[in-house]
Amino acid sequence: MNDAHLHMVVNHFPIIGTILGLGILIAGMILKNNSVKNTAYAVFIVGAIFAVFSMATGEGAEELVENMPSVGKKIIHEHEEIAEKLALVLYALGLISVLGLFLTYKNNSKAKMVSYLAVVVAAVGVFFAQQTGTSGGEIRHTEIRVNTIQNTGSEDEN
Image 1 (tube, rainbow, N blue to C red):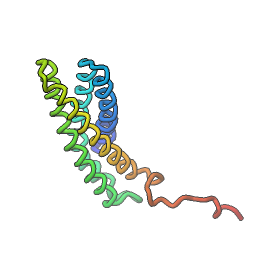
Image 2 (image 1 turned 30 degrees about the vertical axis):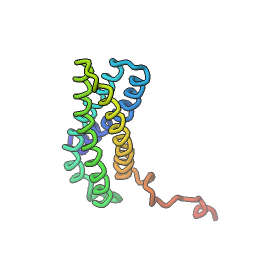
Image 3 (image 1 turned 90 degrees about the horizontal axis):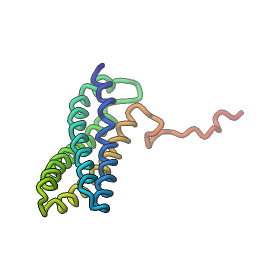
């Protein structure tokens, strides 16, 4: 298994985990259920860990695909830039989640404030996750690129 394969295996969880974790955290806040909020925190922590692995395998994946036809260094660089922003947000969200777990466990009055902070940071994470996922998909899926020429079918008609 090479870095490109490893990158493809680990890069989905930070994106999907952030989206699911945000939904779970909001549900936990609405239900006023600490177990549900703690589940969201755990999802965010795992997402941050997977972000570390995704970033660690990204450079090796880049080396393997950057010279492939229809890929190029520019599109990979755009993906890398937005992925770095997502990683920073997810690392912060992971730390906030550890704090949230600790404060909830200690029944601290600041636990509620931390859950609101986690919602805001997770929402920012979802924004960057969407951009990262789309830019990553565009590397090999040329059909989803914005500048793709759509075939109208008129060339095929005689």
